[in-house]
Image (cartoon, rainbow, N blue to C red):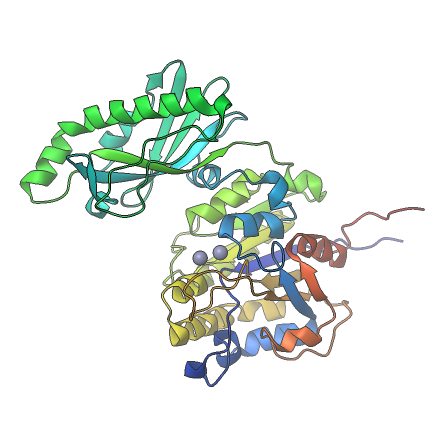
Length: 409
Ligand code: ZN
Ligand code: ZN
C-alpha cells in the first residue's frame, strides 16, 4: 500500500522549560503565558516530556541540539569550537581543531578587559593578521563574528584539542599559559602559544589599536581562546534519516553551526537576529517556503533562553506569547508533522540551564492524540509520549511522518 511520507517542521524553542514561580502565581512562564495556538496544536497532537541528555545533567545548547537531532552527544561532542566554526561558515576538515576566540585587552601581562571594549570597529584587517598564519607547518584560519568574538581553526597533521584555554575568565588576572592535557597534545599547545605570541606582536602597533587608544578606547591587543574541539565527521543527517532536503532556519551562529555540522542546509533569513527582537513571522514564512522544496525544516527560536538567563519572568512569558502568535499559520498545515520542544530548561530563577525535562509535542493529522489540551511543563505529563530521552525525539517524529523502516519481516 502506498503510504504518504509527510514533511516535517521541527521547532526548538531554546530554553523553553522553566520552574513555577511566586512572581507568576506559582506558574511557569509557559503556563502563565496566553498561548492559544500552542494549546490548539497540543490538543491535536501527542505530548510528553524529554530529558535531553540524561537525568540530572543540565545540557549546553550544543550538546542538546546534537541529542535532539538524534546524535548521542557522548559519542560525537568534542567541544564548542567546531559549532562556532561551522556557524561562521568555515568548512572544516577531519583533524582540524577549532576554538572560540575573544579579542581582549592586556596591560603589563594582566587581562584588563576580556572583550576589548566589545570592539565594534571594522575587524577585517585584524582578522587578516591571524588568518593564513603558518606556525610549524600548521595553518591558522580565522573569522571574526560580532563584537570581540571570533573563531580560530588550526589545520595540519597530528593536531589534538586536548589543550587548555588561556582565558582567565575574569579581568585582573594574567592569561593562564596554554598547556597540553595529555602528552600527544604538546605540539598543538606549542603551536597555539607561538601563534598567540605572533598575533600579539602584530596587534601591538596596529593602526586600528593606535586609533582606538587615541580615542580613549581599549586596544584589541591579544587573543583569548577557549572551547577547543576537534572536527569529527558526523554521520549526515539526511542519509541517516533517509530524508532528502533538510534545512535550518535560525538566527544565532551556534544553531546554524549545529545544523551545518550534521549536513543541513542553512538558510539566511533577514530579520532573524538570534535575539528576543528576532522576526519570528519571517522565520515561519521562510520555513514554509523551504518546505516546498525540502522535506525537513529545523526552526530555532532563541529569545526564551535569553530572558531565562536574564531572570526576566514576565518577559519570558511575553516572548512565548509572541512565539505563539507567530505559530498561528501552523494550524492551517494539516499536511505536515509539526514538533515543538525546548533544548533545555532555562529557569528565570536560576538564570542558567537546568536539568529539568522539557515539554514536547508532536502533531500529525492521524496521530494517536492524547488528552492534553494545554501545552505546559506539567500538563504534558499526562501525554501519550510519556517521558523520553532527547535522542528519541527525532525517531518519533520520523515514525509519525511515515519515514522509518520496518525492523524484521
Ligand atoms: Zn539552548
Ligand atoms: Zn542558554
